[in-house]
Length: 100
Image (cartoon, rainbow, N blue to C red; front, side):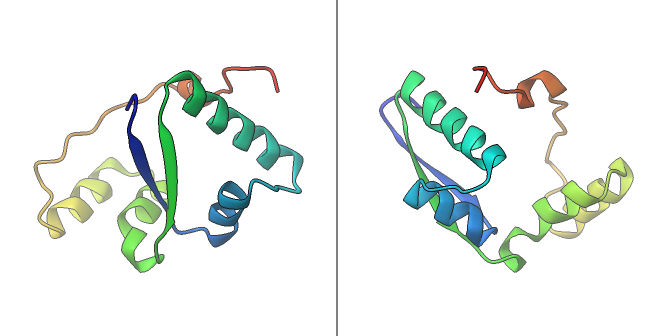
């Protein structure tokens, strides 16, 4: 992503506003924002947050709420996305890099 603008789509309007205006009130959201900005600086990319509707984000919503691999495969197949491949991401990848 170095030197590129990276579009990040989000269906949570509050999160998009926090990132765009960089004024979170919540302590945990402050940590998340600092981490995201830190990574953007470290890897030299410009994140662009774009708001999408929940309807446009239904597959991601489904996956985040339904932890049944067969149901997820079925959802992808029904959308013509049967060639998608599952990638297991270790929990450590969702920890803060810096001690905020």
